[in-house]
Length: 310
Image (cartoon, rainbow, N blue to C red; front, side, top):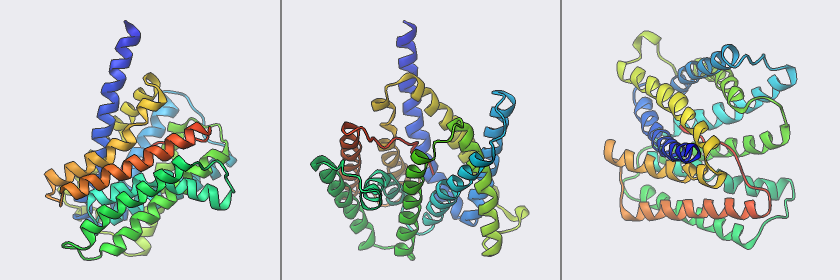
């Protein structure tokens, strides 16, 4: 009975993760309309990272990372949070929420390509190739619907930012698998967030893309609080619970639901364009990502990494 209870709780946590992390894309979209993207990401990561580190140091009694671990965490913070989260947040200023979230979901395909080109990975099957073609074809449908019908200013630049962010996450995924540091992954996430907050704020200062803290509007602060509390804390806690109570094949499904939630929420809350072509394009894209992950699992090289919430 207890196991069944835990399994039910796991499904509830999985649903919560998918919804909460999907809506963070909408929150970020609203936030970048109120203040500079890097500054907003910096404040969010600083608050979230501080909460994570304090929890693990004082409640779990974990020690500070050693020099080697700190260097690895610094590299990961540059790739995962400065590159992926920073550029992904910035991209939302120029492109629809759904498109940005779908591009972010393509990272398993990119990991396969990087492994193939630079590390000569030979475990590529026909199923992997079919999945990659579906992923690229699906994103092409969504891109077409947005690029040639009422294209917003800066659209191509926004797409490039989103792709660059996705590439950063892909490289970070490979780097994690090869670094082999023995740090609790959630504690490590806190350090990555804290380190990235300093780097992001420095970039905002150097590029003069910041506003005085006193001038940050209330709406932007509400978004930051939502992203920290709902995205980084509650969403992450729900994800951890689903990981502990559900099989990997089940809890990993959130990665396919997040973009759909982001797309639907943006259509309902932000009145972003949403039609059947875009929905079918999204479904085809995520089917392709699923097939790539499934094929890599069969060759014992499954791409296993926490899906980034925005």
